Length: 449
Image 1 (cartoon, one colour):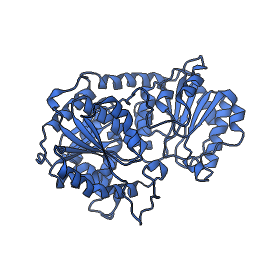
Image 2 (spheres, rainbow, N blue to C red):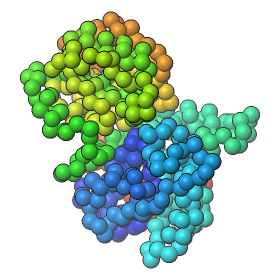
Image 3 (tube, rainbow, N blue to C red):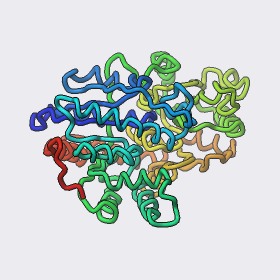
Image 4 (tube, one colour):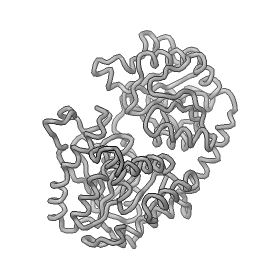
């Protein structure tokens, strides 16, 4: 859409969380705010700056700025020196605590800025201290959830009920969910047609205000000459050429479990055996962090790549997942069912084969497989070892049989795309969000509760 002149360049400070599954949709949200005329400053550390480069290439330097601050270090923190991204070491509570040390530098920046922001837009995990930061600056904090309302409602309900219960006030995730609930507004990467009922329940039962916006699915930005999340471990053109060699549409299986999941040796062997036995062409994206540490997790069995020959492509490291999912040759996607991956699969028009493993994966699988019937469960559990023969059969059928889940997924995809079109529910929500932010004035707290 065209820039909304009514927003008049109103300034917002955004603070993403340094994990691929958080920072990428956050950037997609910023893109939509910039398109509607806001001015945005993005807080990054030196090793997360590259995530912002595609956004910077699409927008004027007068409307989007970066505030590069050193990643806070502490001698007592288990985060190794030099690590600034959570996919390098999965220690969410410690990242939250470390990033809270940006409080004073941000206050100093704000107080010396000639045109300070009227609001903060923080990742949900940072709300526990971003609310205090906003309050000290006499502005508002909005919390961006990369999880859908169907996941957030039971989580928030459970944690908020423990506030005066047996759990310690020092419990980090109780503080996170308390922070989310007490933020001035909540933004979700979802759409009301999918789980609007849970949006209403969050509004009526947990936050008691109507400043909730479902603005998704947030379409990934696609600037020319830049890869999403940085350069991949295999040239994108090489992957596309490999997929182009398959002349039958929807004949390839894509396997990927995101940046946080590592398969054990037994799980990796079972998956490799299933892929080989199925006989289907496949791309298998593998997180290599554990192998780089000398761990035996995520290690492809010796000789596997030679055995599958030209039918299988193993990519070790960062993978251009969107390009793969949108290719005509790809028909199904074996996924952990993280919310970003689930949305990308849905929009890519592939059949979702879900193996939920942790955190929100189980809620996402229930929503998509059980409630909407657009995904097929193949396994469950972080430590579960799938039956290779059974999994091989599912993989084979996923690209050779006309599954009813695929037809239902197509309808849900059309609903999702309608939501983000001009006049759709998510498009209207984004306009409303920008209007509400534009109505704020720096140094004025309104409608806090």
